[in-house]
Structure formats: C-alpha cells, structure tokens
Image 1 (spheres, one colour):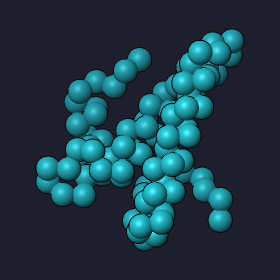
Image 2 (cartoon, rainbow, N blue to C red; image 1 turned 45 degrees about the vertical axis):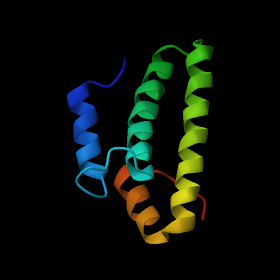
Image 3 (cartoon, rainbow, N blue to C red; image 1 turned 30 degrees about the horizontal axis):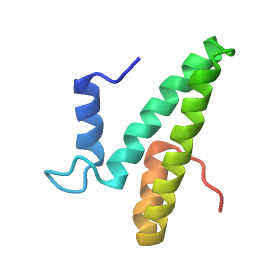
Image 4 (cartoon, helix red, strand yellow; image 1 turned 90 degrees about the vertical axis):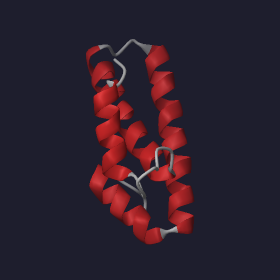
Amino acid sequence: MALLQQEKQEIIDGYQLHETDTGSADVQVALLTNRINQISQHLQKNPKDFNSRRGLLMMIGRRKRLLSYIAKHSPDRFRNLTERLNIRVKK
C-alpha cells in the first residue's frame, strides 16, 4: 500500500533540512525506510511474492547509495539520521 499524502508530508516535515526542502538525501532516505518497512511486513505475510521482494532489494540498494553519499559529505548528519531511523550500518 502506498503512503498517504498526509503521512508523506509528516515524514518530509520531520527530516527536511530547511523549510522548502522536499527532496534532499535525508528526506529520500526517510521515505525509502518507511516504504521498506511496509514491504517487509507484506513479505512476512506473503513469502512467495517475488516481485515485491525484488522491488524491496532495489529500494534497499538505493537507500544504501544515498546513505553512503551522506556519510561521505557529512558524517555527523549520517550518524544522526541512522539513529533516528534505526538503520543498522557496518562500522
């Protein structure tokens, strides 16, 4: 199930870097994390849904690339973001 507009706006408001920010890497990671959690719950109920599993793996890869970009440019922001979203990262 897709995100409702109100839920999406709440996530954007919580992770935006400035008032008009809607697409920074932080916001994208937060939105992807929410969607990844939803699809993970779906796959626990439907283990044979291989198309959703492929989509999940692609989203995880995209989130990983965004997180590596944030880590390279701003390590403090990276640590803060991973703690707020409860994302495990290799040390």
